[in-house]
Length: 116
Length: 114
Image 1 (tube, rainbow over the protein chains, first blue to last red):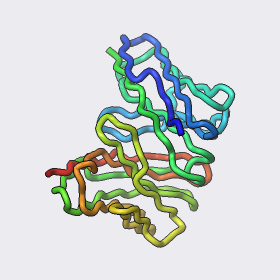
Image 2: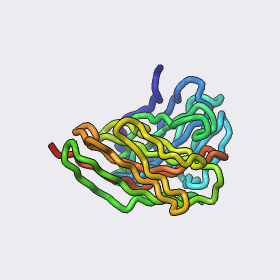
Image 3: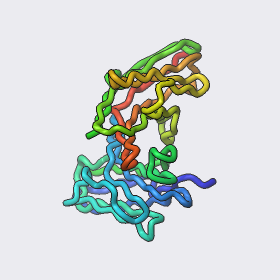
């Protein structure tokens, strides 16, 4: 079974530039999550989708971050304009149903962003 | 609101010894699950063990077991017979059964020494 795919793995940009990350969850997984993990810290939930609807985006900085999940499958996370404090690893995860009810979250390898 | 606190930023243990990682949590939910995830250096996050909050019996997975104290909102992870491959960052997490929202603690870096 193919895992959660993320791209790009690494991205370096100047502040005020824009960047987009892509995630393809495991086939058939209804729930998709984007987490931000700053070096040495725990992942912070940015947004959670159930199919193509948003379940929780309370910690997404909406003035600069946006995310969509096209047709309830793959998802894109965009940052525009980027700030220095956005330097982090962006983790995508998916689960079969409503997350913890039916099983574990499966994580991708992450996209590491460096903002200079 | 859900919060998860791990008070041990770093720990070390000798190979073959036992180590316990601490975690406390807070939640207003009645139905929730607790997890320990492992993140090896530069590798993907993987699930170590999970505990349903409605179950009194502590979960066990081979060398990994938990001590779940519901009243105290404590959820510690015990690793027995530690192996070099256990070296990783370990995250405690709390998940809502209603929303599927999963919140992580700050993590504990575990170093297993030969």
